[in-house]
Every structure is written in C-alpha cells, then in structure tokens.
Image (cartoon, rainbow, N blue to C red):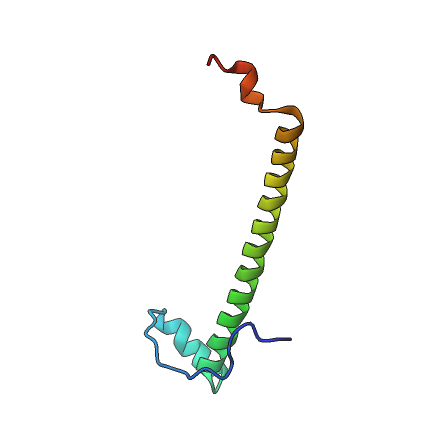
Length: 83
C-alpha cells in the first residue's frame, strides 16, 4: 500500500486527551503505542480523504447533470417568475 503521507517527515510529540484506562490497556497490548496510534491515524486520514473525494465526484456529477438539464430545458423557476 502506498503511503498517503510523508513517512520520512520528522516525528514530534503531541498532546492528546485520551481516557487513561484505555491508554493503560493499549500499552499492555503493544510495545509501541505511538506506532499503533500513527497507523490508526493514517488509516483514518486515508479513509476520510477517499470519502471526501467520492463526495466531490458525486456532487460534481449532480451539478453537471443539473447544468445539462438547465441548458437543454431552461430554468424551472422561469415558469413561475413574475419578472
């Protein structure tokens, strides 16, 4: 799988507020909690980026279809305009 981010970028500490019991349990399950969180965050970013791209494509298709209809038939609002 291709990385969706620069895997060679330097790492830096960040502050997060996470349930301490959850952190304690996670630490008991892995020797590298930072790597696990980074992998989950990368997965989240990839999934959300794909969702946003799909939404943009869907909205563009919708807009294109509406513009095509409007250019062929004119605006529906013209029928009701009092101007």
